[in-house]
Image: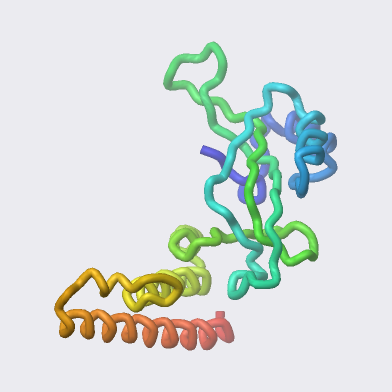
Length: 197
Protein backbone atom coordinates (compact mmCIF):
# COMPACT_ATOMS: atom_id res chain seq x y z
CA UNK A 1 0.00 0.00 0.00
CA UNK A 2 1.28 3.47 -0.73
CA UNK A 3 -0.12 6.76 0.48
CA UNK A 4 0.58 9.78 -1.68
CA UNK A 5 2.25 12.55 0.28
CA UNK A 6 -0.21 15.10 -1.02
CA UNK A 7 -2.86 13.27 0.98
CA UNK A 8 -0.99 12.92 4.28
CA UNK A 9 1.90 14.67 5.92
CA UNK A 10 4.85 12.50 6.97
CA UNK A 11 4.35 10.60 10.24
CA UNK A 12 6.51 12.01 13.05
CA UNK A 13 9.09 9.23 12.80
CA UNK A 14 9.51 9.85 9.03
CA UNK A 15 9.71 13.65 9.08
CA UNK A 16 13.51 13.65 8.98
CA UNK A 17 13.83 10.93 6.30
CA UNK A 18 11.19 12.58 4.15
CA UNK A 19 12.76 16.03 4.46
CA UNK A 20 16.16 14.58 3.51
CA UNK A 21 14.72 12.83 0.43
CA UNK A 22 12.82 15.95 -0.60
CA UNK A 23 15.94 18.11 -0.22
CA UNK A 24 18.07 15.66 -2.21
CA UNK A 25 15.57 15.61 -5.06
CA UNK A 26 14.63 19.25 -5.01
CA UNK A 27 10.94 18.54 -4.51
CA UNK A 28 8.29 15.93 -3.93
CA UNK A 29 7.92 15.01 -7.59
CA UNK A 30 10.10 15.22 -10.66
CA UNK A 31 9.76 14.46 -14.35
CA UNK A 32 12.00 11.75 -15.77
CA UNK A 33 11.99 11.96 -19.55
CA UNK A 34 15.06 9.76 -20.12
CA UNK A 35 16.81 6.83 -18.47
CA UNK A 36 19.69 9.15 -17.59
CA UNK A 37 17.39 11.59 -15.79
CA UNK A 38 15.75 8.76 -13.87
CA UNK A 39 19.13 7.25 -12.95
CA UNK A 40 20.46 10.61 -11.75
CA UNK A 41 17.32 11.21 -9.71
CA UNK A 42 17.40 7.77 -8.11
CA UNK A 43 21.13 8.00 -7.35
CA UNK A 44 20.40 10.81 -4.89
CA UNK A 45 18.22 8.53 -2.75
CA UNK A 46 19.39 5.91 -0.24
CA UNK A 47 19.99 2.55 -1.93
CA UNK A 48 17.25 0.86 0.13
CA UNK A 49 14.50 3.24 -0.99
CA UNK A 50 11.53 1.17 -2.22
CA UNK A 51 10.34 1.83 -5.77
CA UNK A 52 6.66 1.32 -6.58
CA UNK A 53 5.38 1.13 -10.16
CA UNK A 54 1.85 2.43 -10.75
CA UNK A 55 0.35 0.20 -13.45
CA UNK A 56 -2.38 2.73 -14.28
CA UNK A 57 -1.43 5.50 -16.73
CA UNK A 58 -2.68 8.82 -15.39
CA UNK A 59 -3.61 12.20 -16.84
CA UNK A 60 -3.27 15.76 -15.58
CA UNK A 61 -6.74 16.75 -14.29
CA UNK A 62 -6.60 19.81 -16.55
CA UNK A 63 -6.65 17.43 -19.55
CA UNK A 64 -9.34 15.05 -18.30
CA UNK A 65 -11.77 16.02 -21.06
CA UNK A 66 -9.28 15.84 -23.94
CA UNK A 67 -5.74 14.50 -24.06
CA UNK A 68 -5.16 15.07 -27.77
CA UNK A 69 -2.66 17.87 -27.09
CA UNK A 70 -1.01 16.14 -24.16
CA UNK A 71 2.30 14.31 -24.09
CA UNK A 72 3.32 11.21 -22.15
CA UNK A 73 6.06 11.51 -19.55
CA UNK A 74 7.23 9.63 -16.47
CA UNK A 75 6.68 11.24 -13.08
CA UNK A 76 8.44 10.10 -9.93
CA UNK A 77 6.73 11.05 -6.68
CA UNK A 78 7.82 10.61 -3.07
CA UNK A 79 5.25 8.52 -1.20
CA UNK A 80 4.83 6.70 2.09
CA UNK A 81 4.92 2.94 1.73
CA UNK A 82 3.66 0.46 4.31
CA UNK A 83 5.85 -2.61 4.01
CA UNK A 84 7.29 -5.41 6.04
CA UNK A 85 10.14 -4.08 8.08
CA UNK A 86 13.41 -6.07 7.85
CA UNK A 87 13.71 -8.49 10.77
CA UNK A 88 10.11 -7.93 11.91
CA UNK A 89 7.43 -10.61 12.23
CA UNK A 90 5.39 -11.43 9.15
CA UNK A 91 2.47 -9.32 10.40
CA UNK A 92 4.45 -6.21 11.38
CA UNK A 93 4.40 -3.26 9.00
CA UNK A 94 6.58 -0.20 9.05
CA UNK A 95 6.13 3.07 7.23
CA UNK A 96 9.00 4.21 5.05
CA UNK A 97 9.66 6.80 2.37
CA UNK A 98 9.47 5.40 -1.16
CA UNK A 99 9.23 6.49 -4.78
CA UNK A 100 6.26 5.84 -7.06
CA UNK A 101 6.76 5.94 -10.84
CA UNK A 102 3.77 6.90 -13.00
CA UNK A 103 3.19 7.36 -16.68
CA UNK A 104 1.35 10.67 -16.92
CA UNK A 105 -0.14 12.66 -19.79
CA UNK A 106 0.78 16.31 -19.22
CA UNK A 107 -0.03 19.57 -20.99
CA UNK A 108 3.49 20.98 -21.17
CA UNK A 109 2.89 23.43 -18.30
CA UNK A 110 4.86 21.45 -15.76
CA UNK A 111 4.03 18.50 -13.55
CA UNK A 112 0.45 18.39 -12.31
CA UNK A 113 -0.53 18.67 -8.68
CA UNK A 114 -3.40 16.27 -9.27
CA UNK A 115 -3.90 13.39 -11.68
CA UNK A 116 -6.67 11.00 -12.65
CA UNK A 117 -6.51 7.49 -14.10
CA UNK A 118 -6.38 7.69 -17.89
CA UNK A 119 -8.93 4.90 -18.33
CA UNK A 120 -12.59 5.77 -17.80
CA UNK A 121 -13.31 2.99 -15.30
CA UNK A 122 -10.35 3.95 -13.11
CA UNK A 123 -11.42 7.58 -13.29
CA UNK A 124 -14.97 6.71 -12.20
CA UNK A 125 -13.63 4.64 -9.29
CA UNK A 126 -11.31 7.40 -8.11
CA UNK A 127 -14.18 9.89 -8.32
CA UNK A 128 -16.33 7.67 -6.10
CA UNK A 129 -13.48 7.06 -3.63
CA UNK A 130 -12.75 10.79 -3.37
CA UNK A 131 -16.46 11.70 -3.35
CA UNK A 132 -15.96 13.88 -6.44
CA UNK A 133 -19.19 13.83 -8.46
CA UNK A 134 -17.77 15.63 -11.52
CA UNK A 135 -14.86 13.20 -11.92
CA UNK A 136 -17.23 10.28 -11.36
CA UNK A 137 -19.51 11.49 -14.15
CA UNK A 138 -16.60 11.94 -16.60
CA UNK A 139 -15.49 8.37 -15.90
CA UNK A 140 -18.98 6.90 -16.07
CA UNK A 141 -19.70 8.65 -19.37
CA UNK A 142 -16.42 7.25 -20.70
CA UNK A 143 -17.37 3.71 -19.69
CA UNK A 144 -20.76 4.05 -21.40
CA UNK A 145 -19.08 5.47 -24.53
CA UNK A 146 -16.73 2.48 -24.62
CA UNK A 147 -19.65 0.06 -24.21
CA UNK A 148 -21.60 1.71 -27.03
CA UNK A 149 -18.56 1.72 -29.32
CA UNK A 150 -17.81 -1.98 -28.76
CA UNK A 151 -21.39 -2.91 -29.65
CA UNK A 152 -21.58 -0.72 -32.75
CA UNK A 153 -18.04 -1.18 -33.98
CA UNK A 154 -16.78 2.38 -33.78
CA UNK A 155 -13.01 2.01 -33.62
CA UNK A 156 -13.08 -1.71 -34.43
CA UNK A 157 -15.20 -4.64 -35.48
CA UNK A 158 -18.68 -4.54 -33.90
CA UNK A 159 -19.41 -7.23 -31.33
CA UNK A 160 -22.88 -7.49 -32.86
CA UNK A 161 -21.32 -9.42 -35.78
CA UNK A 162 -21.02 -12.36 -33.41
CA UNK A 163 -24.83 -12.70 -33.67
CA UNK A 164 -26.33 -14.21 -36.84
CA UNK A 165 -29.89 -13.08 -36.15
CA UNK A 166 -30.47 -9.76 -37.98
CA UNK A 167 -33.20 -8.64 -35.56
CA UNK A 168 -31.01 -9.24 -32.52
CA UNK A 169 -28.18 -7.40 -34.23
CA UNK A 170 -30.49 -4.44 -34.77
CA UNK A 171 -31.46 -4.51 -31.07
CA UNK A 172 -27.79 -4.31 -30.13
CA UNK A 173 -27.43 -1.26 -32.36
CA UNK A 174 -30.43 0.35 -30.64
CA UNK A 175 -28.89 -0.28 -27.21
CA UNK A 176 -25.60 1.26 -28.39
CA UNK A 177 -27.52 4.37 -29.49
CA UNK A 178 -29.28 4.54 -26.11
CA UNK A 179 -25.92 4.39 -24.34
CA UNK A 180 -24.65 7.27 -26.50
CA UNK A 181 -27.75 9.28 -25.63
CA UNK A 182 -27.08 8.58 -21.93
CA UNK A 183 -23.51 9.84 -22.43
CA UNK A 184 -24.82 13.12 -23.89
CA UNK A 185 -27.26 13.50 -20.99
CA UNK A 186 -24.52 12.82 -18.40
CA UNK A 187 -22.18 15.31 -20.10
CA UNK A 188 -24.89 17.98 -20.13
CA UNK A 189 -25.74 17.29 -16.48
CA UNK A 190 -22.07 17.50 -15.52
CA UNK A 191 -21.79 20.91 -17.19
CA UNK A 192 -24.78 22.17 -15.20
CA UNK A 193 -23.38 20.71 -11.97
CA UNK A 194 -20.00 22.39 -12.61
CA UNK A 195 -21.71 25.75 -12.27
CA UNK A 196 -23.02 24.95 -8.78
CA UNK A 197 -20.36 22.70 -7.23
